[in-house]
Every structure is written in structure tokens, then in C-alpha cells.
Length: 593
Image (tube, rainbow, N blue to C red; front, side):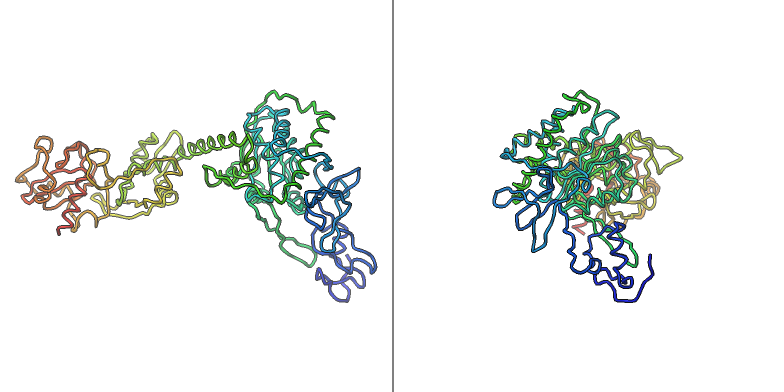
């Protein structure tokens, strides 16, 4: 490279000119060393020499919306204006002329041609596309419907906000590559390759004038390529870009690559990254017996597919100014983002009902998967223990979770349990999940056995989380009921809700302080006491936190179960109460104080 000479800087690229010649930056552009869309430097071209025309594949011009095709063996533009189709050798926009790409090597897909016949209806076009998948693939019928919808969708991508990613997963010779090959024939301006490098994807996206289609075979290990993972993670939403820093001689800048477009992959295994798993619609592939083997693909098939893809391109131009209808779906979140464009593009077609039914099935399966996760079991346990306005002791949550998961405890490892489905689970992990998944608020309390942890939960948040994980939350309220299950409360509560004065003595102290109580209530045989009478006779009541009691009858309602409260009368006689009656009595005493 020549040394810098004297002179002014290039107005466009800010590089120094090399004496009286053009700048080195533009020289590198001319040689193809640098590929960038910056304007060409005026000093690069001798005076009187016209700059070369820019090549385009699609866009809008004075001649109307256009698409680059090959017509009668020459590159041309197919343009539409006022429902009329015409073929042009060039188009103009605001005085600037654009030419179609001249050589097939400039794009990675089969060249388009001009379909001269009348366009079929959207229903007929859909079934023409579906027939090709039915001919060459042996998969479930619903997936043929889905793939045909994806093909139509690829020609309408500017009208949607999110796009799905089909992912073919299966063993060798299961038809994965055939499925991608069909998409390569029929989708809008696709790029198909095997383990495509991220740099090639950036180049393809940078050269595209409209969202095309990326088809990647042998995509196992996708998560290990961080650049490619960024493209797939961000690229399902309209307007998504990935920034890249470009370094050239004496220049550094950030270029933003548009990454939104339809993408499909095939691999022998699924990605192991949650962020990627959530963006794909997985299509299981197994070795089957299609109506026609891809190895028998012949000239007749090639002609038919070419004719169909030309028809699809013309359909794109004919419908480019229309909008896809808004649709209501019974799902939400990521599943809605991935399936809404599919339902939009088939809205009003006979296949819509089948795809909607399949979507509801997927929603049910996804909900079942969530329910069977560790978080799902934890939400279920909290819903069963939750009592409105009361905190739940962590020890109760842990014990209930051990029972629900069939966990095994080891006396040598009191903070861990072994489960058949989730392996080793620690109390610390459950604490994290209570705060992160259920938005639980940890509070520290001092129980009779020392400091303890309780968790408070917001009812509205808990309802939404329970719905997400397919759990039923019927909150128990501290009101009168005769149901033993409704009377079961958590084994701890905020101290201010129990009694107006903190009880410092433990139950053991109570037993030791009285040699022989004047009157001891025999709970199983003495009958029950009406609540108002019991309240007038009670001196104090407090919550039991020790789990050493057997089955007792509530002195107020007679419900059999482990006691949650103990009350003491003015004559120092005492008895046990169930959770609901004890809470009710405590509130009564607090209000009277």
C-alpha cells in the first residue's frame, strides 16, 4: 500500500488521498476487499465517467413494486402498478436508476421467472404448495399444512411482527434435508447451506432488499456459535438488528445488520439453550415412505416447482399492498408470537380449523410440560398451603415438596433431598425458586425452636403464576367452615397477627411451670364449646410451632387433626384448636383488647 501523500481528505470516507489518485479506502472497495454500502467516492471515478448503477432484487419505484426475475434469458424486473404486471429492464426512483442482478452467482437461490397466467386464489395456491410436501415427505398431515403455510408466509414477511422457525429433528435418512430442499425451492429468496457460518449469514442479510429465508442443514451445535445464536435469538421479531464493529484502514464504525426473516433448520438433535428452544417449532422426522422419493426428482418435477415459485412471486406482488387479518388465539406469550403469523396467512382457508386445533393441543402439551417441572411442583405445593393473608413456613413448604416429589431425606444431609425426576434438590435452590418464580418475600421469625424462615405471597401474582403452570388456586380464607381441609393453615404467621403480647415461654415451659393444672380439658370426650362462650372464657391463645402433637379434636368445632393453636382460660385450663378456629379466636381477643 502506498504511503499517504499530501492533499485533502476524501469527502465520503474521510481517508487521505494518495497523492493525486483515489483514496486507499475506495481502492479496497473497488477490489472487493471491503464490502460495504457506503456511497462511492467521487474521486474514485474519473471526470465524465458515469457511476455504475446499483443492483436491486426488490423494492418500490416509479414503475411500482418490483421483483428481480430472469425473463427470456435476461435479467429484468417484474413490476406491478394498478393491478397490471409489466416487465422492465430497469426501474427508477427519484431520478436514480436501478438494475436487476445480472448473474445467478449474485444470489444463492434459483432465479425467478415470469408467470404469465392468471393467479389462482389463495386457497388454490395453498393446496398447490401443500401437494408438493405431500408428494415428497412422509410426515403427519398437520405438519404438511404447517409447512405450506410457512411457504406462503415467507412472501408476506413485511406484514407480520414475528416469524416462526421450523426445526426438523430426526435421525439420518429421515427426510430432514428433503424438507429443507422443498422449502429452498418454494420459499421467498432463500439461502440454503450446511452449518452456515455467521459471516455468510450477515452477508446474505446485508445484500437482501427484503426479508428472505435462511435454511440451515446440520444445525446441531447451533448454540456454540455465539454470533449465529444472536441472529436466531433476535431475528424472529420485526426490526431486530445485530450490531457488528467493522474495522478498515484508518476507519472504524458499527454496522447494524437486519436479522428479521424466516429461518428453518434441520439437525439430529435439538439445541440445548432455552433461548433457542423457545423460538423453534420442532417437527419430528422419521424414516418413512413418501409418495415419491427425492432421488427420483426429475425434469418434470423441476418444471412444476419453477412454475409454482414464479406463481408465488407474482402473488407476492399482487398482494403486497394488502394487510394480513388480525386473529384471536387461545394462547399467549411465545407460543402466540410463533403461531399468530401462521394463522394469519391461512385465515379464511379450509386448513385454518386444523391448525387452530393443533395449536390448542400444543398449548395443552406445553402446559403439561410446565406442570411437571420442579417449578410446577413448587407452585402446586404453594397453592395447596396458601391461606390468604398468612405467611407460609419454609419447613412446611419443604415437607410438602418432599412428599409431592417422592423425595428421600438423609439425616447426614438435612438440607438436601434426592428425587427420582430432578435428582438432588437443596433447600437453597427451593428458596431461590420461591423468590424468583413465585415472587415470594422472605421474612425471618423467631419460633420456639429458634430463628425460622417464612414466605409471604401476593394473591394476585400467585393466581397468575398458578394459571401459567396449570395449577388450581382456591385460596383459603379465615372464615367459618366445617371442612377439615379448609381449616388446615400454615404452621407460622407474622407475630403481630397472633397476639397483642409476644409469648416468650415455649410449650415445654408451660408444661413445666404448672405441676398440676386446676382443670385440664379432655379434648376427645368433653364435647365442644360454642365460639362466643369460648371467647368469653379465654385468657390467651397462641400458635403452636412444634410438630410433636398427635391427632386431636378442635375444642370449638370438633374437627379432628393436628392442632395448630392452644388456648388458656382464666381458670388456667387449656385446650387445642384447629387453625381456623384459633385464628378466629386470636382476632376476637385482639379486637377486644
